[in-house]
Amino acid sequence: MKLCRFVLNQAPDQARSGIYHEGKVYETDGERAIGIHEPGSVSLLPPLGTPPGIRVFEFHRATVGDRALSYRFQNTTGLYGPNSDVEIISASTAVDFDVHVVGTVADTAQAVDPGEAPSFALGYGLMLVFYDADMAQDERTQSIPIGPSHDLGCVIGPYLTTPEDLTEFTVGSDPTNFAWNLSMKVNETAVAKASVEPGIAFSDLLSFVTRIRTVQAGEVLAWPAFDKPALEDSPLGRGLVAEDRVEVTVDGLGTLVARIA
Image (cartoon, rainbow, N blue to C red; front, top):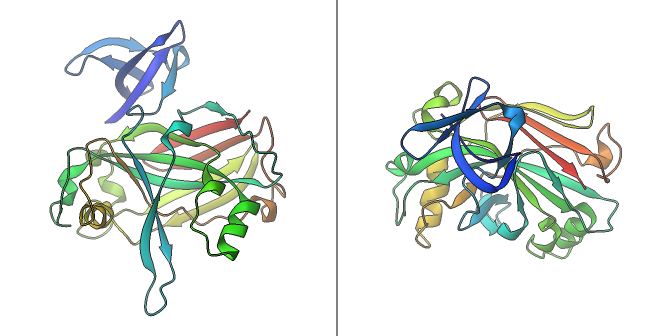
C-alpha cells in the first residue's frame, strides 16, 4: 500500500488520510474507505504529518578501520509535503539538495535486535534535504558536525510505501535491505541516474539507535544520502534558484517533487 495524507483543494484546512492506488486517492477513516478523489483534486501532505523526530544517518571515515555510522537530527519545523514550494531564505548562490530513502518506525522500540527490527518498519518514502553547499564545505573543513548548512528545509513523500509492496527491491535475506534505481533532475536537466545498493538495512539503523535510546512510533530514520554530483559540477552548472523544480524518482517509492520559492 501507499499511505498518504492530503487536503482537498476545495477544503484546504482539513487534513485527511488515505491510500494512493491505481491513480486515485482513497480516503479512509482508519478502517474503511469513505471517499475517492482524483489526484488533481488533492494536495499531498507529509505522509504521517510531523514526525516526533527525523534521524539522518551518515558514514564517516573512522580513524582506524572501516567507515563509522553516525546520525544527526533534521529540523521538523522545516518540513514540507510533496509538490510544495520550499521557501529558501538563504542568500547563498550554492543551494543544493540531498536525497534520502527514509523508513518510518511503527511502534515504540527499545534495544531492538536486528532480527526483530523488520516488524518495526511501517513503510518507506523519500526525503529531499536542501542545504548551503558553501557552508557545508566550511563545516567539513573545520571538522564541525553538519548542522546549520542543512537547515534550509526538507520534503518527505510522496507516499509511505508499506514493506509488502517492496519485496522486488530487497537484497539478501534481510527484508529491510534494498537496492534502488533512481534518477534526479532540476527542471528538465538530468543531474544523476544510478542503481544503488546502500549496503545497510533499516534493521541496522533501528538497532543502532535503540542501543542509545528508545525510539517512538512515527519517528523517521533516513539512510545516508545517495551519491550525486554537486549541482555546480553537474550539467545544471549552478546552485538552485527561485522557480527551480527538483524531481526525484526511485522505483517502488515514486516521484517526489519540490519547487524553490
